[in-house]
Image (cartoon, rainbow, N blue to C red; front, side, top):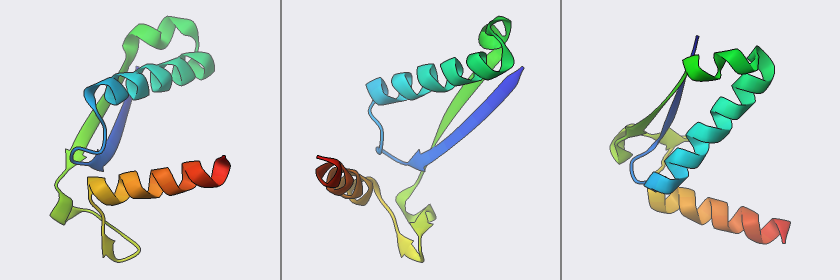
Length: 77
């Protein structure tokens, strides 16, 4: 059995994105641990309040996270 906990700022992921993260994490663990353990893999996504999250000493909220992701996507293009 595997339990994976993923913490993100509140509202950083849509419901669809949470489903995709859960699916991909489960796929990765099944690949490493073996397909029979897929049904025993738990993924928990916890949303952390904005005032409880900081990176590099700066508060991080969902808007900032989306800004960073968009900037990095622009760099990759």
